[in-house]
Length: 330
Image 1 (spheres, helix red, strand yellow):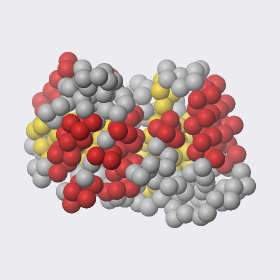
Image 2 (spheres, one colour):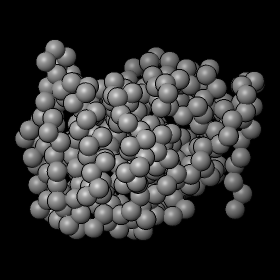
Image 3 (tube, one colour):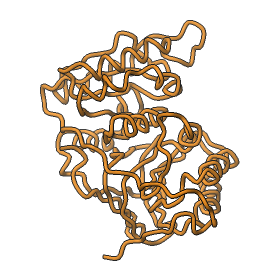
């Protein structure tokens, strides 16, 4: 099998200093019935009814013991888009992670707010707590990056218990369950709409999340310095074409995309018509000369796939598949 190995910066003639390729990260252990998991809200407020429905699945259907952070249902006293104060959200996350009985920390939902708490977390204490499963997406992109750079830990980008993808999409929920409990059964991923945007095959370490958050997080102490050698997973919600153009241009101009091995695109829910989004992606990322798969089926859209970030995989744009070299969890 011949794999595509791009030349860093070749398509744009960039001259950024070379950086080490994205490393593979530590895989946490799979879940088993009876395990204790913690649910936290690092970002925006959570609806009680949706949360309770999600907790019922975790407890009754999956047989997990569930601990809910003390401030999960809080709303910030002045900034109503935040689930309580920064200090309380950070404390809930850190205490859940450092609880020796907890095997997984699951974010209730995304929204906004994760960027405000990364500097409040004791990363040394969290590193000492050992690897465990961390699950979320959307605004949680910022924490995926931080867990990679500060803990060296592979994480899961997938449906959260207080979101529609968890509560209404049975296929997505079943794929998440199998990823958590039977990870060897979901090493090769695709979706009904997945298609070749730029042909080719590439291998690398999976990274990514929301395009806007990757761009906004650029240069922060907990963000990675480069996507070199990575299989970049990109999606977003509610984006205008010019804003997506701006995000991708920022990543390009900063040299962050130099040497990226391949790109997989997820959903673009509530964004401009997909033909417009596709045109922006081709204009900005096409010149990189790497394989690109579109509509792979992860992110904010219906039936979102659960993907691991930080693990070796092969992106086959011709077959429109992403195949992990090993199960996403031990």
